[in-house]
Length: 573
Image (tube, rainbow, N blue to C red; front, side, top):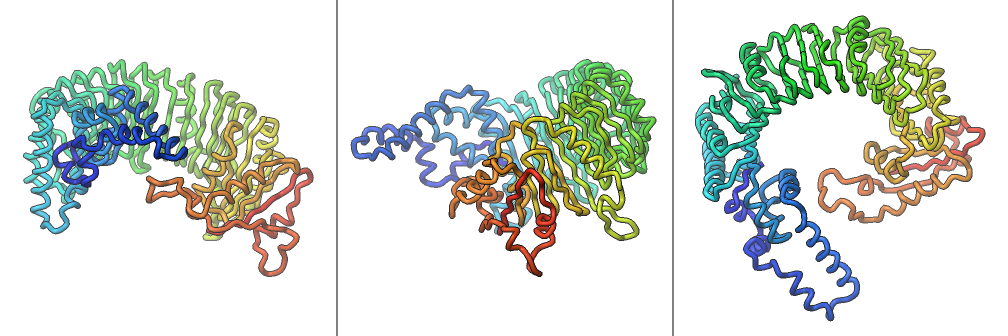
């Protein structure tokens, strides 16, 4: 994103917007109000709504407006907010988050050679910073996204960062795309800042010539950064207020020893090259997330983190014994996520505090006995049905993704590889059927079944099956919107009682989408399902016969329910 440079931004705006920025168009609403006698009732209603909306957004606190501006994609969008009111116009010019994206800025100069494009970028950043500082404005956050880094750019980057530090910058977000092993070395001034609270560094090297002193640092994210062991040790010991510590695809890290950080709340280590041991001694740690490499086993010691609430592990080397030893130490654990832990075979998960459990891609897991009476959410992905629940009474949301089973290059149905999967799934649904309002969605390739109740559930004999239990408070509009947004089914079936209005409501919602929906005026790339759905046809089973009948319709026709009716719609996209 570009930096907040008022003058340069205005050059990119339309004539209409420039008039609004200069104040020529600020009284449009008031002038229109004076012409009310000439307006229709519909126009007056729309005008009243505009005036009311303007009054509301003008009353927002300044810190809320700053947060809204920080979410906008570029400077032009921030500039356009100045037409909303005088307050917004004053705030956006003093906006203290400066964002500079080299690629986006240089794309505007298509006719220039690469050398001239780089000069354009350097001039833009320098001018933006100078104009910002001439108005004696502080810098809350500096974001630099460098996509074409070279050694000639390094001193300019040093200068920009030093200017921000001199003006009490609180956050630095630096993303450097590394090519040909040309790394950017962060200037030493960064590590002696008394104001920096957040460092997000990507694709650079850290090198210290003096002691580190970052007394206010709270968040440290290192992504694709080469860090030596001494550097990491110095960072941890010199930043007593760190709350969030993350290492992602870093190199040079041999061991991670974290202690004496009383405010530490979160630690993440993702696919780093080298660490053989991670030991965290932080009594207030709430979240630990580790993603390791199979070829690099790592010993994890979280013994002192007794109040841990969220644990995510992706560790192909973790055995049943190692997991049970870790899990038993966290009596307050609320969220457990195990992914690609391929050495796990037999687990017992017993906890009265656990609220969310994820088992994803643990391909050798054969048995998981789950005793968690307060479990609210469960997610599973694999090619078997290895889990069983002793008391799922609190379960309100669940996702099951059963992948195709391949044996000797042949694909089998789930029941062929795991004869107990159907029985275990039925057993779980039987335990949940008395929970009021739960719905079940069954997906198989391009076909979907919605069960309004968890009785007489239809499960197709497919090798690729996804099931989702929907919590009771989900209204049918949200359910349908989410379903049609994430997949475009060819056949949508609903299993419900004969007195249910649910099939009718679904049909009417799809039919009343409009020929030219205007529901996504500001989203030009990812429009909702209403823009893709071309036609809806009620599928009549009695008319479905002969060679033209699909396997899915034939299966539905041959799988009648005793107490419920099946309504199917064929959708064209």
